[in-house]
Length: 293
Length: 241
Image (tube, rainbow over all chains, first blue to last red; front, side, top):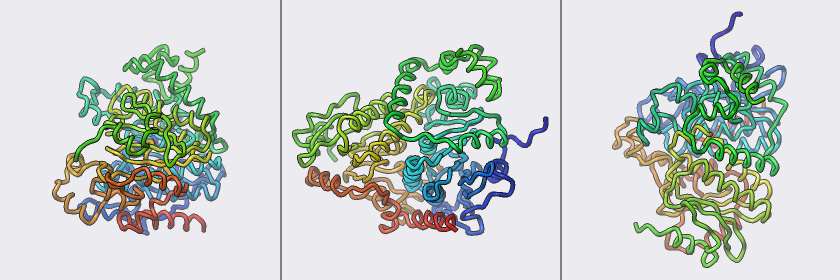
């Protein structure tokens, strides 16, 4: 079987082109508008005409969507004032037009070079995401690269109705290097890649229920997963938040004493940890499901 | 400046009714009165880190308030140095625990609870994003440490010399750390002097709060965040065509 390039190896624009219906993408505030960060310019750091995020509208399986993809190669996909305002505007447009909104995440969080402006922008985007959710307009975060979803963008991703992950994707707040610096190498060895991925990678997040889909590292698979979620929503109701509270309490009670991700894997139905480590996302999901029976 | 005990600060904000607020592991939960009316209080003190268990505890309080005390305003006090920098918490989904707390607050907002934040001490990073910055209106004590991070820390991570950032921060308040520059960005509605009548200020804050997010407009008006509102509006205009 022939495959296209791996999703995690693609650029933001390639990911969009591969996920949406052919030729359907219409970029908003495209690079010719040259919206560049005045902060980076002042600091003598290269700027980008899209400020590290591509936004627009498209169709997936014939259905209208709003879509954003962060550009990891540009200051780690981090959120500055313009980048953040583009995201806020996009989710607000999605709420206004009752059109689902998909965010292809690749960001370490707030762009430090722009200070607090990026932090506030993330908070504003969170408000806009919840505007969508109140209207049952689906919001979907796709997390499929090692830059992943960290810092404020990690939190923001959990505000969306659904998360689609690949095994390459990582979701968290503090990254391994930061934790190692604070707590020491004994507490978290950031060079131990297996540990890093078992801590924050797609497989563990999927097992715990923090990602709704774990798919192949392939744009076609991501597109299919998005397509399945476009007609669904996860409304913020009292019943739902109470169920979530119970679920998170249970998780903490069950695994709060262990620091070992293998205990979590085994507890969630993975019988052969070594084999599961090498399995693809969908194989892994199937193994865990079989183990829970 | 002199640091005051959490109890002393609660007394200033809620008078005698502050006794209804429990302090446990530097987490604040309970009910008090402002201007004779009930409020629910959640928050942090002593600059504590917020981990999974803390986020769940605060979420439980919000859910209880929604169920038992409909439409009661929720006052969020923030004095936290950040998210728990801990691998085990990350592994179990710290971001998801924070997202859940935000979901509970959103439900409260939709059900008619006004949400007011007061940054009382440290209000930085994920600890501010996971509840305080999600309020209808956000206030800060003058002495509070509000913002992404101090310039020294920003310099250490970005490798840009501190004097360069210091100089730039004079014209770019986003780079400066503190309640006042944060207010210039629209991130804080108003900075409160520690000496004033905090109870009266809080009562007025609750009475005047609305659910619209006015921060980008404020940031533009105050000149600290000039681009955000216009860019957002351009997206809205282009997408309407």
